[in-house]
Image (cartoon, rainbow, N blue to C red; front, side, top):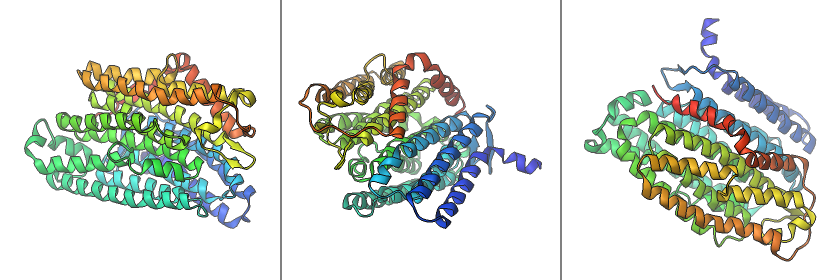
Length: 482
């Protein structure tokens, strides 16, 4: 009995994996229909909600399993709750869309569950091998999801692009891991941190090259520039609910593991990895902000917006301080809410003839859908960083962390990129409220409306409820120590 209790930290992942297998069997043996597929979807949402409660009930202590390869601490619990909340919300939004385009299959919620299991393993990984296992479990399900609409060329193309570039990034990641293992003699983050002490990377070129390749692989997963090339095409081609999932949970998981790797495996090599992260941050902020200006498709605009948002999050990581890690976690939590709300609006954009995804189609929206227009405007204002919405505080915290760390130039570039980004967010609002009305959109569905309304409320009332995110984020940042 004591042996079983020692594996209690694995309970959330175990419940998720067994639940995914059970739902797979249920879907396979039930008669194929929209009803059975939707039932599997609702059961998947209930399963994730139950696992969130299990994680929330865990104690604050740090527990390591399998010789330290798997770690349960405040950081992993914080990330897992956000991942599961984002995954459940995307499933909730997807039912109406999947029925309309006739791809309501039970495999989709099962793939989301399996990908979420990989993400949960990923954020608890304290070993290079465990990290790779979690990353591939997450990615393999994502490759299938990207091409889930097999009868559409764009979806198949997006899945193929994501798979090819994902395989390339995995190869680079593995090469970096092999170099790190070769020069440290271990895959454990704790052992690596003991070897890569102050100044060691300056003389150990092989270890430095390994770290660079490791960062390249992880930068691809978070779509940081210049490893962002897959993002606009995959976001545009994949089914809209899948795009929402891509933009929310996997990106959050990849950012979380990037923070853990740099903060726990290479704390003595800050000067080396800080320069790389600063470059990724500046490049992502500038390209994401400027490339979005000419976009007419909302999904492509949100793709470049997500690239810019990762750049802003990396500003906090560049500070290489506890405050910086805290600001990144707060930013990721707010980014998750903004992204889910924005894609809820995208899913709500449809006419009787089918979905619409162009910015121009939003013209005159307040005339027929004042609630949706108000929610979308609030989301755009928050993404632009307009006070007192949550997006303003997210950017304020990462910029403050950079300034406190003496990175004044980085903070200035971030502020300027944010000003540029405000242009295309405000342009969407201008089209909605001031351009000549087009054909009216269809009514908003229940699941989409719920996510949209809840996201908007959380962003508007952040000044009231912000402590519920900031407190756990601070505890998570403090837990990132051996």
